[in-house]
Image (cartoon, rainbow, N blue to C red; front, side, top):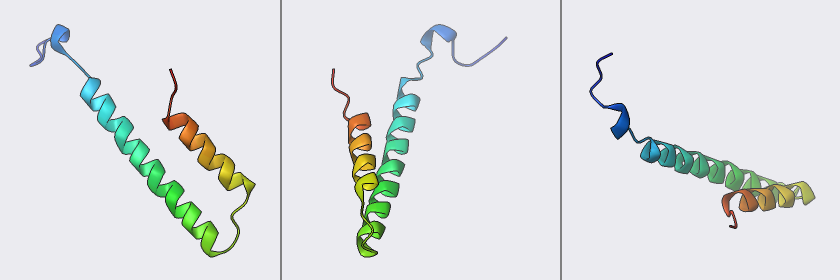
Length: 63
């Protein structure tokens, strides 16, 4: 099988990192829009706080 990139030099790290950042940015946009909408219609509840805490917990991994 002929390929332009040899298997020992293949590194998917930058692609994986770019995908992770793009998905994180999309989640931030969706969560922000939801929070703004909930505040505007005066329906901000405990479930929204739990969702924000879950997002913060998942993005800020402690080691």
